[in-house]
Length: 219
Image 1 (cartoon, rainbow, N blue to C red):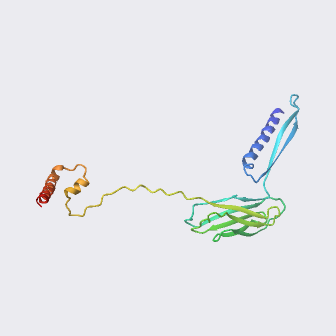
Image 2 (cartoon, helix red, strand yellow):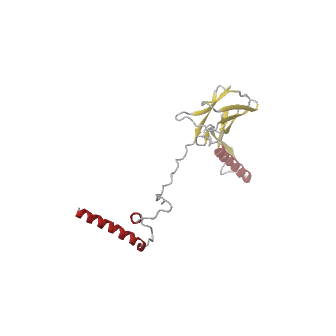
Image 3 (cartoon, rainbow, N blue to C red):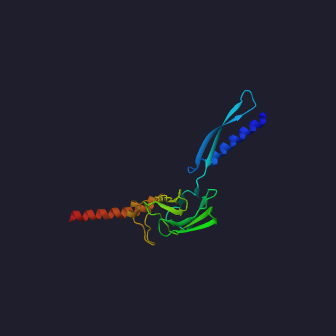
């Protein structure tokens, strides 16, 4: 008897954990809690207090709850699907006037299960960019008075700033056939240059300067 009772308690606990993981993460679900009392044949624990918890889905659900597009502008056309589910047991659902509040986006509604399950197709064209400062969203009217309009926000990722690599300074190329002068070699010395090769040019440059000074004094 105790083994059956232990299995029952473990089963109830597993159901509660399952509900928390798969249902309560959705904010649209309504959660209900209560406590039950189980009678046992044990003398030490004649009664056991068991918590009970249930999550009820909304009457109408849309999946995904929001849409995230790649950065603008879109390099190619993009098709997005939205599943709309009627979770009521008896009432049939009708949808009308599907639209997206920006021009250029195509919208189509397909009824896969009459009154119960629908699929909305949104077609974003190539080069689409969400207008800055405007909330883009998909809208569709329903026949349910409690949920007259279904809204699904459409957001677009921001593009990461481009990184420009640093530019390295390059020396202008010397025209072919032009010999380098002593002044060019001094202004931009080459690594490993042999100064013996530059000595005649330096002596010639010094002589010109000295001769110029002599002519000025004589003048």
